[in-house]
Amino acid sequence: MSAVAQDLGPEIEAQSQALGRLRTEVGKVIVGQSYMIDRILMALIADGHILIEGIPGLAKTTAIKTVSDAIHTDFSRIQFTPDLLPADLVGTEIYRPQNHEFHVKKGPLFTNLLLADEINRAPAKVQSALLEAMQERQVTIGEQTFPLPDPFLVLATQNPIEQEGTYPLPEAQVDRFMLKLKVNYPDQVYLDEKVEDYIVEVVFATREPAAYKLEKLANLIEYGASPRATIFLARAAKVQAFLAGRGYVTPQDVKTIGPDVLRHRVLLTYEAEARDLTPDDVIQEIFNTVDVP
Image (cartoon, rainbow, N blue to C red; front, side):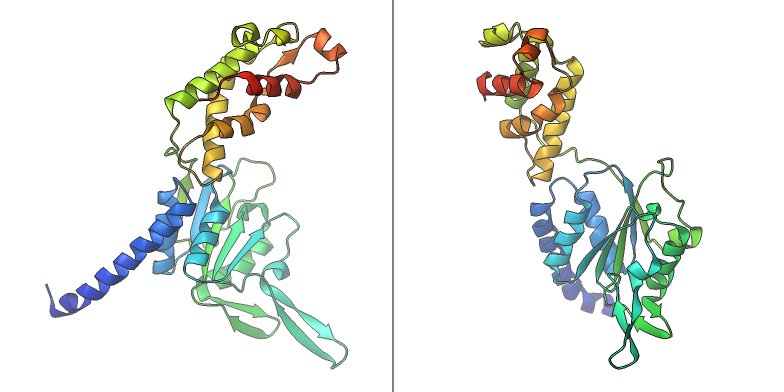
């Protein structure tokens, strides 16, 4: 080992420990996305940009906002849309009649951490406005050039190209991203067997209400929820827990998301309709009656 490497050893170890503490603090807020957090920190240290392709609900905004807060830097989020203009990103010159001069108003691009949400929903002229910023770390407005803050990291999310209303990103821009991540919903959210049984019982109660002390609902439900409802209710409850910053599912998560999963799967009888009852009324009664673990 060279003398230089030996001299750097203690400093590297100290910085590595600091980075570990940062990961731990961010992980307290963003549960189950250690892969995404590690890559954000990697890009930040390596002075690179990230392109994320994946499904919605990944806590992307929360992740980068949490990192920004943890290292005390500025954060901006831009929702890319088909009608977005380059000036909406970089800023523009505004004329002030009182002194007959143009004044530069900087756009949201002037930040440390920038979340470009659904970047491929904006046309090429908007994408080109990012090229100079991503590569040169500067922006030209009118005849003036302004340096961007240091650090400057673009974290862009991209919808699959086959979705309607999206544009393929220019190759020159794609090449400016250091990393491209494919991120899915977290699988670290724990679902206890008792909560699993609770989900099954709730769904069964929509089919056989009398077996769950819900005799009064027997003549009100024409068809109960299908087996697919059990799967979807378990999945949705996991995401509900994840969005709440927890690594485990509670019965309240099931109750919170349950009506949204079940209301279009529980079909009522004519008697229920005559009594002006809705699926939500029936589902609420089931949740009020089925024993909670």
